[in-house]
Image 1 (tube, helix red, strand yellow):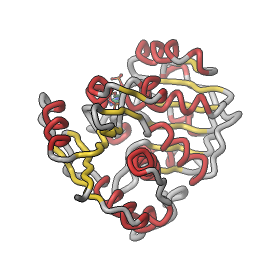
Image 2: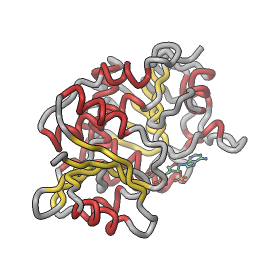
Image 3: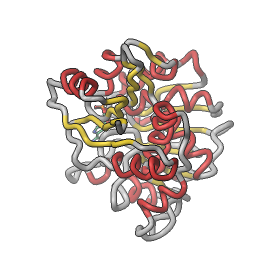
Length: 284
Ligand code: ATR
């Protein structure tokens, strides 16, 4: 019988994961089916249980269920423990094993695909929600010189900085305190499109991009995101969206389920081949 996998979230219609995993399956010669599962906002656990009873072997979990996925899993990887959230579930015969491949996916995209070594760099992370929390431990493990967290609601950034202080040089700064600071890398981990947000303005000064080698949005779209446009207009040398991170976290999930890590480069070309420009210098 063909093994079944799915991505579960709400909303889920626009997820690219089915195309990605179909491409990985073809590349590796694995026989599997990967679908989209829309779970009701109050029905995550029921949806997962039903899927498993119907033969489901593994799940990717997306917004807003990553914390519930962590609670559902009876066994966790150390990196899921550190993130306190799961984006990957694997059925272990009697229980769900929960992992989190988001952070490793980001670090691999930065390091391997974009050629940005993180060791010794000064990194700024915008946002202090679930997406930010999931990337902090892998970023700190890459030995940056400093990791600064900045969030509209300052005490959330301060809380995260305290929670991760044992893992490396992390601090929180209010958006208004960033003037005069310089960073090698700025990562957007907010859930907002920032500059394009209903005509509103991001709380951060444009100056954060002055000396930046790479501005990276964890989000992605068919067009450059508002963050990408803002960073480019404000002087970032290179900008990228998070499509590479999406691919790398998917490859890491595939490895957990199937024991083999697919090569992401051909899949990037396949799914993005018709886009203008090169990802790392995509802005006009
Ligand atoms: P996620 O799991 O996607 O991180 P979340 O936990 O709701 O979602 O966190 C959303 C993050 O985006 C927060 O850091 C939030 O800032 P606040 O903590 O101040 O709410 C940030 N965010 C959302 N909309 C924003 C906006 N318009 N400007 C700046 N930050 C925004």
